[in-house]
Image (cartoon, rainbow over all chains, first blue to last red; front, side, top):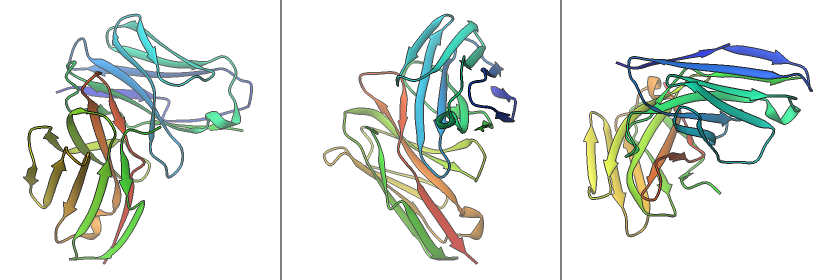
Length: 113
Length: 111
């Protein structure tokens, strides 16, 4: 079965510093990949999704970007972090384009100070 | 704006009682799913109900879907302290290939 690895699990970064969160997938190929952000005690906000290598769709304007250099790698980046970027970032996948069950990684906690 | 909105935002019940939460959405969907999240963890899939289904059961979970009202409910029967978590609905929009989550219902089951 598929597994999703996210790292780092926890990150504290100063305002203005760069960010790179990595997500890798095992056990499947050609998944749809997603980055969600969850503020403390809140719901999930879809940030980016990707249906294939190099294909990124952005859901909200922001200072974050995403890349998919390989089929099973999804990276969330920022050149300069803002305080408002703090949150819980979840990588997820679905296995086909019909939007079936979504599988989540364990998340990365980002605190911008 | 969010496609799915859960109601209530928070729910506190005694062990053994039933917990009911609702989800409303705005656009046509292929299916609706419910997920559970323990504090600080990833979400775990609970149940999926397709747009042509009206009710579905899984163990102590019962999900209903009313496409005419664009709403769904999740019922947890005979709740246990271990059911304490946040519960989210997610909709798979008919026009797209992504899931959109609501704000969640935080459920506290007191022993």
